[in-house]
Image 1: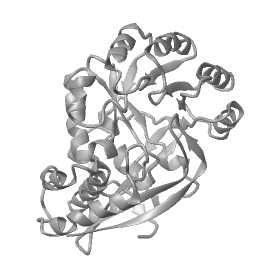
Image 2 (image 1 turned 120 degrees about the horizontal axis):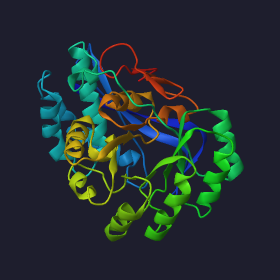
Image 3 (image 1 turned 90 degrees about the horizontal axis):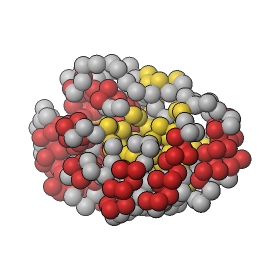
Image 4 (image 1 turned 180 degrees about the vertical axis):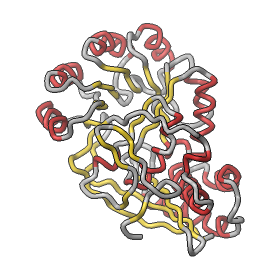
Length: 338
């Protein structure tokens, strides 16, 4: 098998702002694993908060290229991950791209959908559509531009309740809010009461991950469920989240791909935690792979490709929040060019 990759720069429809930074062009790498006839694709984005850079991703993929070349083509993806993961402990984003590429290749080689290896149900939650932080009028315009049944509202700039109150006046859609660790415990508890009356379903990562004492107070006193994001990056974090949160948000790039995500899902179910999976502004390569996990989830945030001005692949699509998996094997993603 041959492992290679390409860098892409994907302009966004609108500047995407969270509490920490703004992105106008999303840089991403797509890894490809091929035997010359069948190819599988995986993706990892550049992300300053998680120290994911073009240089780091490129070096990581190149480091394990000869290892991948020496592996048997029928190796199960879980065994593949066990070989590659120890070499990429400092770069889980690159590990994710390679893991997904191999899952896609493995499923295509066996002429099966990727999801058929871990679920037999076609039931799937709807995806939310994210409204990044902006001035209120621009956030209103984004909602009016993209009517959707569920919106994820990014908050953390000081006028958060005014934002949600204003947006509620123009749509009856369900809201979820994501503070990206920008609040205090007192704010989160107080805001939860206001947000519940505004038809908000849950609050994602209200406090910094280090504030575990604060999160214990929030979980006890919040009238809305709280979901971990920054506090739950890898498998070992799931158990620690049980006393602090009602659920977790799994990001494939943070945990290292589909293989560890499946383990996190199993661990979360055992801990009676609700499960969400989210994205990081990937193209349809990453989103098509992420969406294969949908039958195992309670909530889904898979709108990354919808936020792009132009995609680099075809794959899963969404109509009014509902998933339409691409036809074909693997994840169903097909590159426009590589």
